[in-house]
Length: 316
Image (tube, rainbow, N blue to C red; front, side, top):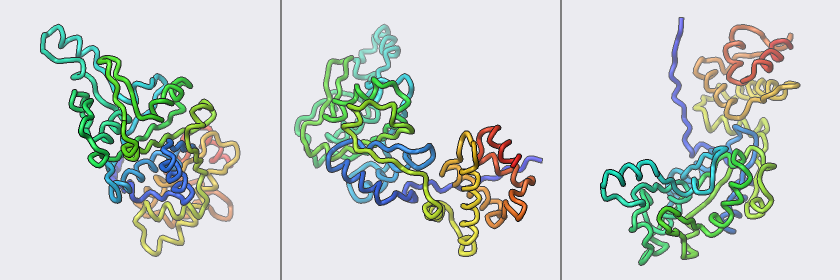
């Protein structure tokens, strides 16, 4: 019989736990007005950090509470980070004699939105009012965090094509032959750019020279303990058992010849389900080693996402 449960998952940005060294890197990047490039294994919290920064600065500075996100694709080009142009809709409307102009079919994206907000415009579209920067002061602008996620997915041309635009916060809209640019130096304080990459080796040297770099290591047992205390609503009797479950997790993570090691995010999911099912205190090991029962088979797929890896674990 199928039994479905709903778990209330608390993924609030404020519960993210950045390390002191990561905060230091962010502060340096902001001081130098450089993008912060974060690398690390999938699931180590690279993306979540951008949400934490936006949430934190929305409470202490005049920043949007959520980042403007661009999810990089293999087909990404520099323009995609700033705006999109619906040529098909424009063509149809032109033949329908609606009176609409090209700018009515242009939509600002991640960094384009951040630049518009920095100069005091709402950035919903690309009307003449947004392009007109007269009588706009830095004080009227609003801060934004821009997250360019998994930039290593794109071709090497993509980050190279962004060098000038990210450094000067400007971009050209070819369809209407107009350029949007931050003029006042103070307005650059309204933009923070965070890039994530699973592998820094695919990024060109010229681009890396213009970034502040930080690598998130896989967390230690103590660090995992601190993270899980933030993520789960625990009672006092749970604290001792957490250390045992962390030791179990590291057994799976460090198992020899594993193709895909379980990540921090998968550890959190595993702990959430164990807590929901009242099994945080359940031991997965005895004196004979791993307890290969129905409960192991039920929860192992949360951590092991490869058939061969599951077979290796169960064959031990």
